[in-house]
Length: 239
Image 1 (spheres, one colour):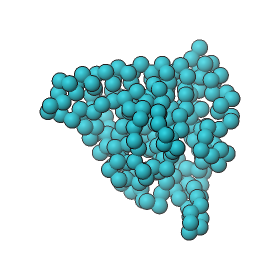
Image 2 (cartoon, helix red, strand yellow):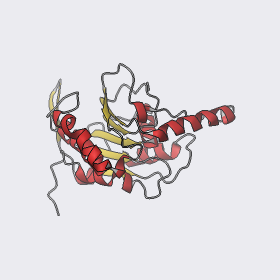
Image 3 (tube, helix red, strand yellow):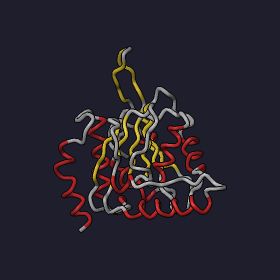
Image 4 (cartoon, one colour):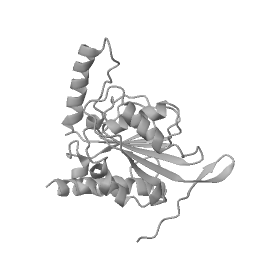
């Protein structure tokens, strides 16, 4: 068994230095049979910054074909963070529709500190809740799945919009965030399409991004090491 890293994250505040525990939740997309294990296996195993492994949880909201309210996802997330306090550092990693669920929970007022959104099914100009301190968006220009999802939801909205508040998925997973919110940082994954987890090098690079950010190697922008070899590692994996 490996040695657990001390689960303490120290930050500066106006009152001085306080200790915060990192709590990580990973939320899968729709049409998932295994509870998100395949989606997050490599990423979860590679995270090594100051977090107790027991504080990393994959949130399973079951198999869904087309969410209407996304209530199953939000309920599962809320249940998984029921013991997280405002003194803890809550990081939610959302994939595809799981990104929408993560944002919904933040919109409900839950103290989400950091969102990591991978191939998010959100509009590219989405307005994120104010309490979130940082949002990282991982996108791929080859992500045709979010484009199809956006089209299908537009059709559903035309047909059923009179009776249901049909969600309108967007293409942030394909084109990244478009706006002026300085909290949001785009990361181009290259030609890996929607299924990032099929490319182990991509999951390793996302883990490296998070490790380096929380180790204070870089602040408020992508770190140099990732910029130098991201495209090389993803292209090698895709070949």
